[in-house]
Picture 1 (cartoon, rainbow, N blue to C red):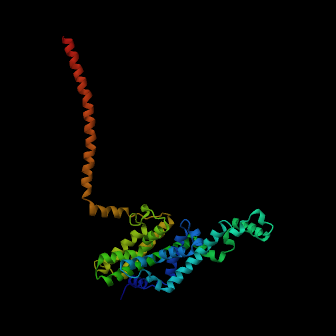
Picture 2 (cartoon, rainbow, N blue to C red):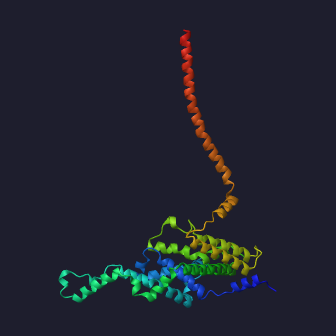
Picture 3 (tube, rainbow, N blue to C red):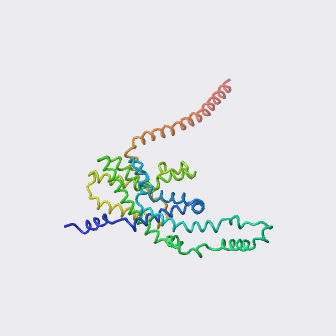
Length: 339
């Protein structure tokens, strides 16, 4: 008979991500897009581009894993239910951005009238004054039904719940990526790690392409050069699940899924409550660097010692010169006295 722990972990591993966990994932991703500078203006000027950006954040992991496995990158579009669900969340979350962009921007051309037009377009002048009054008001007043999503998400408990549910979907994506890669390359652990990592954190990686298209890409902000916390924790999970899948780690899959999910959810909630943008892996990274590249440290320490000795020798030689000069002067004085 299985223990209660095994039964709990097994029931957890069989939990379906649709629809509630997927909704949380799409909501957090779309709200992250909305917080980007200029997102409101982009949503009003070019809604197709805004929708495409949101879909990259929502389905970036699946797109990147398909590219790595030479599968159609638009394969995610075949799941119409998830596309409609993500699009509806994008629409409700960004509709207020459209309204904000309208009310906070300049009036339309037909409201920008010249003095000679005032006699003929009195109704438009009245509309222009109403426009200016509305700009001073909160746009939430007239569009409260759509703004309930953003207002509800602004509360910290809601953000903690949605972010925790999103981290649960990360575990499922990593396991799905590792299993999918194993079906192509049996026990190809490098491929399994890469696909699990791409499936779980592809949204943060593939958005570099989106920034490049927009013209906002910067080399110092590249995810490959400076990995963020989601990319690091997903890479760690991909390695662990690959070792378990290749039977190099003596633990059942459902227990590992349960333990890993508890770890990433607790870490994410701690980061949000303490308002820290990153959770450092410095101790683990330093230990791994010492294990893999520790042979470079004695060499560098020897170089530092030699560099430290060289200036001291130079100082000693410079200091000895006045002493020699002083001794020569003393000898000359003695010779003069003897004479």
